[in-house]
Image 1 (spheres, rainbow, N blue to C red):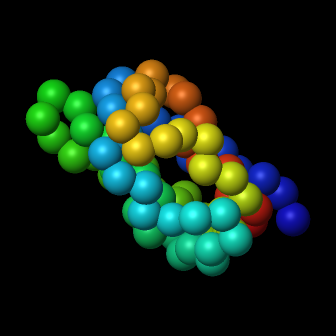
Image 2: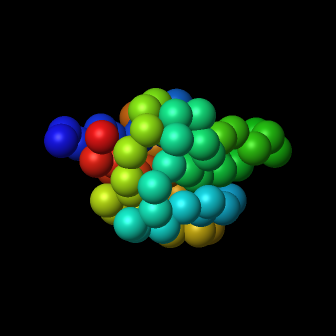
Image 3: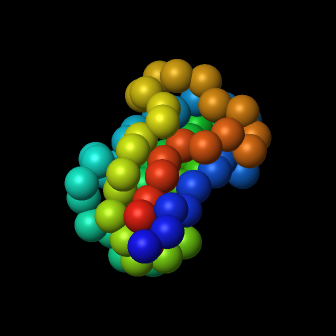
Length: 73
């Protein structure tokens, strides 16, 4: 198995975390919602796998390119 980092495509604030470590996710599932310019931008799983870690907190700032979650695929 390998690890896959889910990264934010925009800078903003973490609005909602949709998953938790240990949770199985499918490709396309929303992991985290980022609020940027009054829009909600989903960070989605790029492959089927298991969430190993969530690297952000709700309400916390995130920069473009920052890792928000790590999946084992």
